Length: 255
Length: 255
DNA sequence: CGTCCGGAGCACACTGAGTGCCATCGGCCT
DNA sequence: AGGCCGATGGCACTCAGTGTGCTCCGGACG
Image (cartoon, rainbow over all chains, first blue to last red; front, side, top):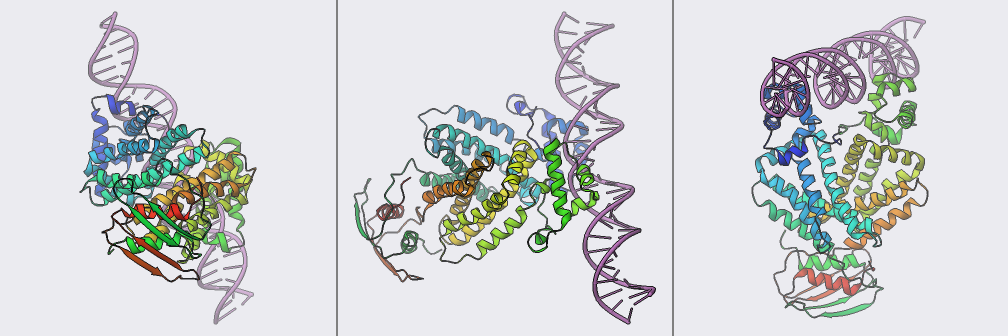
């Protein structure tokens, strides 16, 4: 299903826009919105576009592909982007930037993206197809990270996990923007989500010994301009509960 | 594609095994291994199994489903497992345990799992289908975490990212075991991978709402048998730094 | 005992996606 | 003109998946 080489993808970036492709996409979306994806046959689409049925499958390997006409090119761009990376790039930051390429594609056509989002939410077949597209992005990120982490212990594991986290964060931000019908700042939403991931996987936090219990006191001179004084008395509770308690107390404003 | 309610899934756990289903799976796999998935038609399968074509689709909503005959039941089990969770369970640990349910299913039939792995690697259509299955697991984990994190800032983001990371880690460990033809210890591989994730996301390491300043003191009687006493003096540092400091002080396993 | 009933299976026909093959058309080069 | 070539259209075919109506079987009920 749509894993074969696409004769069109090259044209996507170089050609001065073959009209056939565009008119097929336009006709398809018109019908999809009007009467639904599954209620629209390929024959309906080609009839509306005024072209032969065979031509449809020359431009799109499957009916599902017409819903994602731009992802193939975007994946190519992402691969190039990662391929151009140098050793000076911080890996996690780099894959976040790569993810932003995808966002940019969505943000370029808000109306189209929102329409497609509504379709993919309703139609299970399209959701599955989208999954396979996203998977290829994730693989691209993971492959890049594997290269950067090669030699390190658990390199591939780290790579896979970070790639998955970046994709999940990207999608979280993207979808919150799509749910708002493309109003608002897509970049801001995704930046926020990606920042979260970057914080979590920040370049090699310094490891600490596992706590064996007891009481601790710590002082830490603020690195920038703040100071933090923390006193924690530990009485057998698991660490996560202590931290949760602190967060509950300090954080979480009203709702 | 396979999102409709399955009439068989209930039978999966309760019935004393309908022979039809088993014989279809057996016939299908025999042919898939012999001549490949795409080279095998549903008619071939039903001919070998000696049943009617229509019966195949009564047991399996699609040809792809016959390759994953047990996932539906496993997803049900996972949902129950997560539903039974109490507030005493540490969320990340809980979803890791949920992921181990999936591993167990694979580990119960090493030979079958390895065969299926080889198939899904070769056949793009099956890979896509597997993606949709994995996605449902991931959604189950994410939904659970969203519930646990609800109210917290970035709760859904954290939930989505952690779910994705857990799935990625699980798959990483699982696949390393599958690549070794099911020899070796599957649990050990996955435990190792999941431990990595738990270390990264360990109890709540991340920022929470930005504080509004001031000093706080909190006391919380332990819900079960522990008590936690926390005193935090806040001097303008962002909350995340406070939390980070506490975590660093109390300890955490080395990377 | 006969009959009725419901579920499981089957045969058949039909839709629609996707493919292979060949004819056609239009430009373009020599 | 004539021939080449890439793009297109038409047609026939395979195969997945679905709807329908039939049969067969076993158990319940009169």
